[in-house]
Length: 204
Image (cartoon, rainbow, N blue to C red):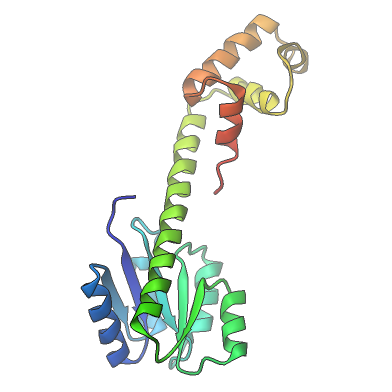
């Protein structure tokens, strides 16, 4: 991915938000911040991410807490990596955050390098997620070009069936199966069953 990363900070501590923005800006990382979970939920950033990045959420905030926001985001299918931060970094909070799907947990006050390391690791994870998503979308676009019969042949090919078995299962001739297989290969942009199988295994 070539897009520049974006870090979204949700914390009721204005000084903390300013400090993080300054630190990330010094490293060339864009940052947007929100004073509450409610303000973030009203932003446009709940849509699927189009650029790499992560969320930096404070655990304890007035109104909806960071843990509650994390749970809400995961329920909505948010794929952005989340780093939880807290000035009350006890073990139960850390465990709750990590069990809730957070990538990392950092206790305030932190060392700048520790925060940068966590953010950079989350951004790398985000790039991987976006790359997999783009790969899956490309495969789905190719699958959409297949006819119903070609999809049936593809499913049986991936099930390990030979042409004769496919012909019997679909009540068509072996020659017709061969024709469908050829069209599947062309539309999917593959040259072998192994390549077809690899496409089918691309994760969501």
